[in-house]
Length: 310
Image (tube, rainbow, N blue to C red):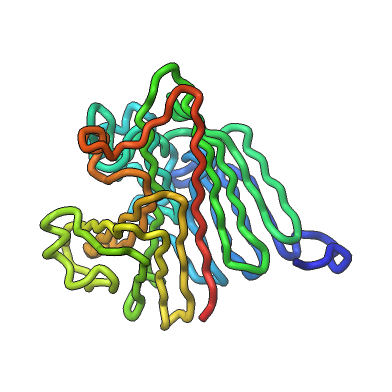
C-alpha cells in the first residue's frame, strides 16, 4: 500500500471512470473502466449484470472477446433457446443463471436471463490500495448484490455475490461463473492445471475430440466445442511460459467445468465454477443435482482471479 502522504492524487495509482458508450454496437450502455497500478485493469458492464468485459494484467489481455464484441443487453424475453450465445460479447467473467444454467430447459433459454439485467445503485469507491464497485441486480425471483474489488499493486480481482430468493416459493437457483480466456494467454506453450480428482468429458464428442484438455489445441475450421468437468476441483491455473505469467482462479462453488472452442475465428477457453451441471434445470432437478433457495433465503458465493508474473 502506498502512503497517502506520498500521493498528490490517488489517480496516480488507481482510476475508475463511469461512462456511457457513444458509438458502436454497445452505444448507450454504461461502463466502468478501472485501472490500477501493477494490478488487473477491468472494464465492467453495469447493464449486463455488472459482469467483467475486457481485462488486462500489466498490458497483457486476459479476456476472450466474442466475434460480436461488446453488445447492449438483449431483452430478457429474447433469450429463448440458444439465443444467449448470439447476444454474448465474451469478456473475463459472464454470470449464468439465475434460474437456468447450461442447455435450454423447461422454457428457460440457455444460461438464463441474468445477462439481460441492469445493475441499480451503482457505487464506486477508490483508495490507494483498491477500487471497489458495487451494485444490485434483480433477476426474478432473485436479487443479487455484487461487490467487485481489484487491488492496487497486486494482480487480484475478487467478486462477492449475495443471492436472495424474494418469492413466496422454493426456487431452483443454479449459478455459473463463465470465465473466458483467449490468446495470447491461451496459446502455444500454455498449459492448464487443476486440483481435480478426475476430469470427465460431458459427452462423446468431448471425449474423442481433443488429444488433451490441458493444452491449447490447433485451430480447426468448424470444430465443435468440448466440455469437461473437473470433479472435486477448487482451483484452476493457466500458465503461459512465453508471456511469463500465470492466472489462477478460485471459487466457493462446488463444481468446475471447462469449455474449449477450438474453431477458427473463435478459439476460446472457458473455466466455469458452478453449483450445478451444464445440462439444464430439468436434468439437475431430475437427478437431485439442483440447488434451491427457500423464500427469503440468501446464498453467498465468491470468485477470485489472481495473476502474477513468473
